[in-house]
Image (cartoon, rainbow, N blue to C red):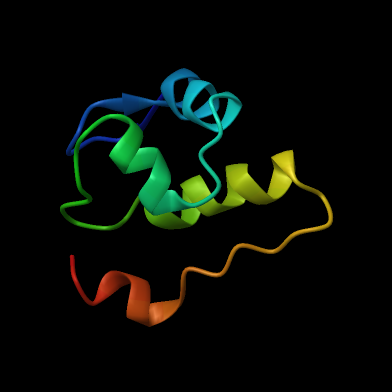
Length: 68
């Protein structure tokens, strides 16, 4: 399933980036050498980050989207 339509990133690609050590939404984008465009996928990526790390809470907040 596509998570980021703008960059054509799928859930499997995001999971692969997480397995390779990405620990933030920006690290997922860096893994694929791209940047968020509209930012609508950032909450979904953070949700996947949080589900992979039950004790953590990745906060994306409005400041994360200010550069989008």
